[in-house]
Length: 430
Image (cartoon, rainbow, N blue to C red; front, side, top):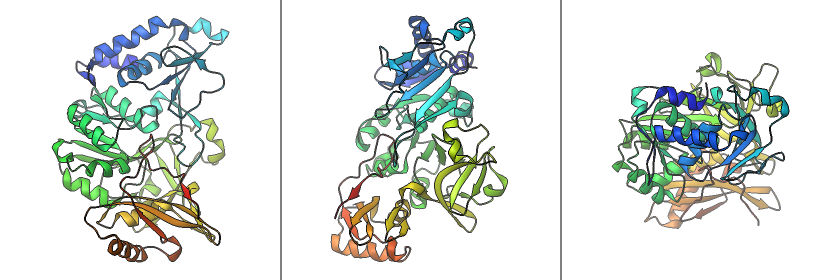
């Protein structure tokens, strides 16, 4: 059943999009039907859409799922595949194949394509089905009462998850994808948000506004980056009535899993028992492998083993009864032949009460190849020299010598990319 048919069947009588001009579910469905009537030749074609505004984007994905053979969601940096040409109204398409013409009256299965974030590499196109994208959606009365702040770009995997979760449960979406943390918070207030899904980096920025308690949050989710224990503890203390989840998912692996016990990492017994239809294993390199219910995209064949497990390329560490994330395998800093995981150093720095945000990256060195450097946002009214010494001592208690930051930079702001994640591409020269 297509996305549009699901909403038609649900018949939600509520607000779908909360913006300057609100859009109800019935209006959204009508807009999607008008798109199909306006562009009948798009049926069975390959179509690509860019995000301009939330109401039009939602109407487009409703119109094209079950209508077009392939649907590409284009982020700002993603390049169009070679066989797609520009089409009016932010929509792109290619001509359908002749053999499809006799099937125009039938609903079809649409293959959705999204580009990976390209945080540490060139973005790649990965395909999914609507069923695999909505595997974790839970429909109940409580979910219908949620007003979600959309903080991720909806053409990214995490953003699309929020959009689909909201649409299929009859909830309300509020566009909070633009601006700094203060501007996003203003949109949250304006839209009476009670549910937020964002990266840990963005959550830290939002908490720095010191106004988050004015939002009556019922649902808090974190994804896209490592959710450290200090941040989880802070959110749990500030919003004790909210359901707190940190979610593991990726464009490559699809819908992964959610951890609800308010602890960093995930339970060790999941490696043996699996969880929510997902199987796990860790190899000798500390790579986490996942076996989802659906087959991964064929473009990932070089990362799939004979048992059907997909190499997530995330590094993990088993400690007692927990599996903790260390960071991406391709994001290592090479210090004289010793490998340093920048996320691991960040998590140690973030455990210090003065540190509000941290970004660790490589600094070129003619002798050792690379050294570890860090940009830090810290709480006001700290003596820089004293704090720097405290942080070095703090790191020495948890890190090996080669992992220690050799340069600590105190900055006013640490920017995030379009996905809400810290950029991993920076390397300072000597």
